[in-house]
Image 1: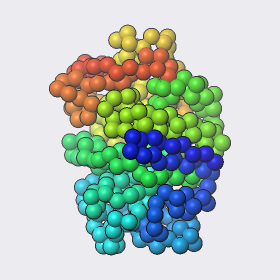
Image 2: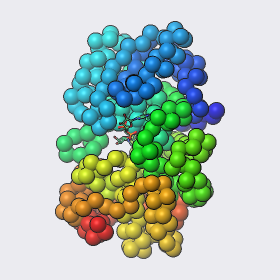
Image 3: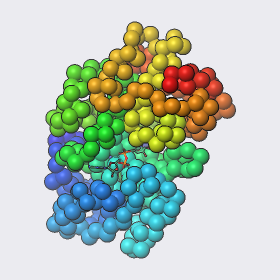
Length: 356
Ligand SMILES: NC(=O)c1ccc[n+]([C@@H]2O[C@H](COP(=O)([O-])OP(=O)(O)OC[C@H]3O[C@@H](n4cnc5c(N)ncnc54)[C@H](O)[C@@H]3O)[C@@H](O)[C@H]2O)c1
């Protein structure tokens, strides 16, 4: 269907956006040498799509081993990482073996760190199976597991050799997971692309229902935006920080309440935007009301779960963008335009705590 290239100083890799998985063997053959791979996936995704992927690759002459991680955030634990590395070693991998990560963002983060660390780094490719993983997590090479002190605190940058996003796999995605991915689309639109924001507003009903044509349109645009940002800042030292919008509050809400990632990011985006408006940093009239209406139209929550300012404060202290008592917060200044500002953790947590 289309290919977006992620351009990096030392090379580049393709993100293939396809309707079906049919073109996977040919794309994989171009991306990695040899015909030997280990598929890392998790039970739910394996049950839905594992047989199809395995059959396609076996027909094309690939020798495949398989390593199963637990479903969801449980894959992002030190035990699952250790088991996963052990699975690769038991399969007898060598430096020519490719790792194929089949799953959502959690699976991709965990499999990516396993690939980054086994034998000091194996080539890997991502087959994202959630909308969130397609538009965000699979592009950019950030891998991570969680630490008791916070999400994604242990990880590495390890760019994949290819991303193959086949939108047919979204047909089995529950609505709550689709909405979670749409929150990341809203994030990138709000921060970088007023045209995409208007397009999401115009097609909110179709996107919420998961209509394939509507989803393909936003996936293509969101991936192109993400690829452009990653190319400018592969290791997140500057402009890429903009993509963390909504995550300071969102991660705190997610780790305290257990709410799905995208839902928490939507709440975080709205709370951080309301703070930016009150601080006079966002000058677009009524942008937070517009964002709230859009989140609701997409089936996303807009209200904070009952959290105290103190719990939020403690959650935000784990933010990777924090230094001493301030956080570098990306905020929209207009629809599709963003700035990085400094805010103290106490000011932000008290403001957000007051919204609940
Ligand atoms: N690396 C990055 O740049 C980056 C960016 C954003 C988010 N993330 C991470 O991504 C994670 C969230 O992503 P996610 O929501 O995709 O995680 P996930 O992998 O936990 O998937 C969510 C759920 O959807 C199920 N699922 C996956 N594909 C399916 C399909 N096709 N049909 C039916 N069910 C399916 C999974 O089994 C799981 O229950 C978080 O851990 C977050 O930190 C990483």
